[in-house]
Amino acid sequence: MSVYVLAFLIGVVTGLRSMTAPAAVSWAARLGWVHLENTPLAFLGYAATPWVLSLLALLELVADKLPQTPSRKSAVGFTGRLVAGALCGAALGASRQALVAGLVAGLLGAIAGTLGGYEFRTRLVRASGGEDLPIAVLEDAIAIGGAYFVVAQVLA
Image 1 (cartoon, rainbow, N blue to C red):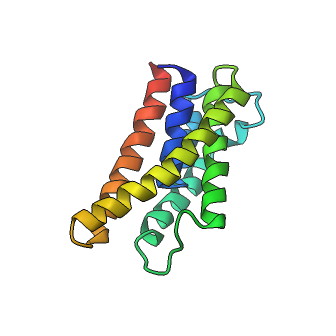
Image 2: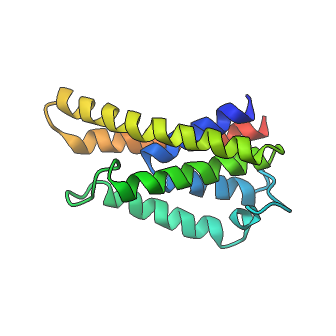
């Protein structure tokens, strides 16, 4: 699969859960699936980075279910997703000498994932009679599965 498609898809994942994709990309770098040595993103493969990002991803999975959590479309949430999408896309691009193109694809994917994920969740909650928790858990599963799918494709 094209690195540009993978960078876009990892961006989509950040639109769903902003810390899941960075955690997955960091684990992929640590495990040698994504080669970021001698790039500005080498820190993603450092020993502590995947653990820290995984903890943040787990905390986000919990925080997402809390009623006081702001919308992903709020300025802070949206910006964080754009940054994470660009970072993850750049990392996948850098592993194939296309850092800038990966960054742009990841950024575009994050926009699509944020807006599309919001619509997906809102419409499914409405269709299910207003029950948000099951839809939120489904979105978690899609984000986690999607992140794994994307980083596993880098190996192919």
